[in-house]
Length: 355
Image (tube, rainbow, N blue to C red; front, side):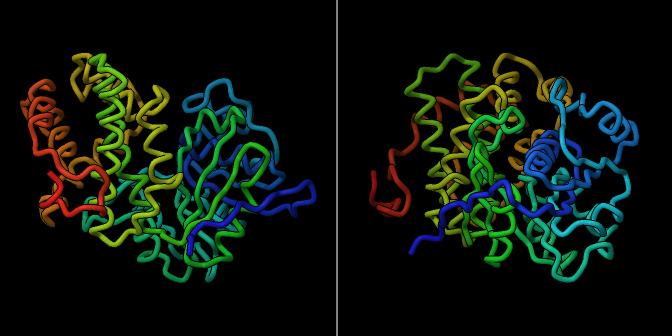
């Protein structure tokens, strides 16, 4: 039986809800825009007073979405307790490195049974924890969900056709998010595999960096397709070993998200890989980007974890050697091409047989 259900339609008679969005970056801004345009009241939290004042006065978040006007009932604030206290449902778009700290500091502000949905695609270094696991540890009395998919923030803000996945064990959480976000250009599908959906969203950032490198080196379309599909095999092999459902990787949160981040220059991780491929130092590329590229941090954690549990991940190892070691890009590519020709699709043939 499939874990997926058709998205629910939101109509013009949708009841107005108070919703909080925590995090004033590009994706938090995009979700705020969707929610407000769907007729809901959005308590939009960010740390920066200047940023909050700017959005309040001009309706524009110039740092993350210059030129994009935010319409509707949006209340920018730097008071997290007030935003959470007024909200029926909370979306968290805080970078992974600060995620636990912020949630822990304000854990008492969340209510029993309140729905809290993570929008962050990353992994915490200590203990290899995903954001939903952090939420479960810090605010266990809340109902937790994860939103992930092929969702470039700039395209959502531009009202381009987009689909995403809400993953939650509780069907009420899935329905609530579908009702809040679903509209004529933003489709929300459902899944119960919280761990798989969330891990796919974090892992694909690594392969977006690889794809950026390939693009910078003017590799052919055949090579790019090979890298994407081998990346899919690699990330699904790793995730399933940790308990994810392999079918999740055939959907929007898996192959869908992987495709968009590996083929679009709008992807921050792709741009990092492209810059490095053109000869720029990693530190310079990150500074020039000016935003968080989660794949840089995820790469280190996944390399350590895969080696600890014995999962074969040649693309992860190769990218790590390029970014943090002394290996040249051409040397890593040559070593990948000389590796054993093994199984194409994971879980069909044992790796010891498929040569």
